[in-house]
Length: 464
Image (cartoon, rainbow, N blue to C red; front, side):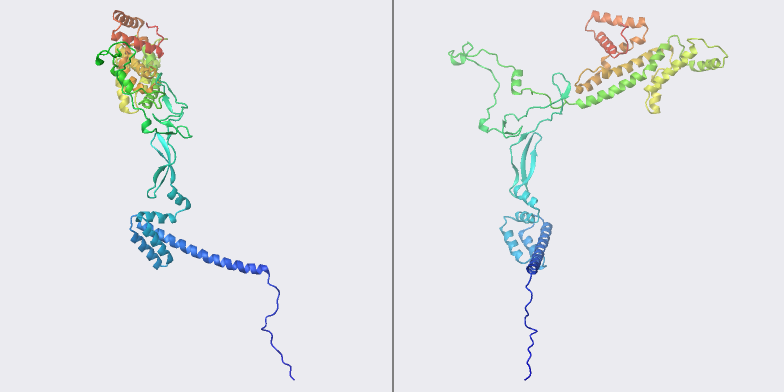
């Protein structure tokens, strides 16, 4: 009998047990696949939301609800938005009070978390009017607006603010000040300067200035048949009523007075000009000392050049000292230096200065002497303008600058340039006028100018 064999190759064969790690790996792969699918769905939803946000933004906040729904339907038809999202979109749109509210609510879904918080709870900001700061929050959400979240805080000038002492007129730093509150406000809160307004009923009625009466003062009143004692007090004057109704401000000034900075700038400009003038005037003073006895005027310049040529070539001898030709050259050089100091930058300015300045080849000696004295006196007056200002309130300098030239006598600024007898004669004349009439305006102006000139150091004052 033939042996029957059975094929058992297809039977399940006993194998090694499955490792837990392999099972965990397969489960992990299934979970990763599921997460990938979910991520794809989330990405698709985000893409759909992005498209809808762009479509809503293109329509703007003033479109109708029907236009928004049509845009969502188009997105569904194009496969950009899942169909089931359309029903939710329609429900939210129809439930909104108006199209703009629905637009704002929908646009916040595409915003960041912080933007959504700012939309619903408000964005932090400070509301100020230059005097108070009120902490508040604001939002574009309909009906939200701007909402205060704390009591207002009064602002005041920082300690470094430049101010002017109202008593002395001197500039100073304001310094630390106690917290200031508005008139009638009540301190409140935990911060310095924080306050609240009193209730209308608690605010006292303003006092009306008027006559003051008192029953303690004897005197019968005819208004009540002589049975009531009344005050025998004079009614207040207009100034008293005005001061009571409009009291003067107290405390340090928180800002310089008007024109303070402008006056300070003008003073600095005049101080620089003063130094320039007093430097430029020195050659003219040296030239004045050489003028007594010197022959000047038309024709003297070529004559002195010819004589200088002869002396330079030893054709004629040169005097050992006080040689007229040498003195003429020195005086001419000094006046040229003075002319250079007074002239401007342009040729026209230089030509004008030359015509109005002393010149040994143009003026005769008496005229040259008087012209040189007058020019030096004018420069001294201009130089004294800034140094004669003795106030710390620079807002007053503009007025001082405009009135100073006509408030001084130029002759008092050139006494040291005159011969002793001439300066004494002028001083004696002014003294006699003052002695005869202490209110004589010419004498008062002269001695006031002389005092200014002495204080500026123009001369020692021996010319009294």
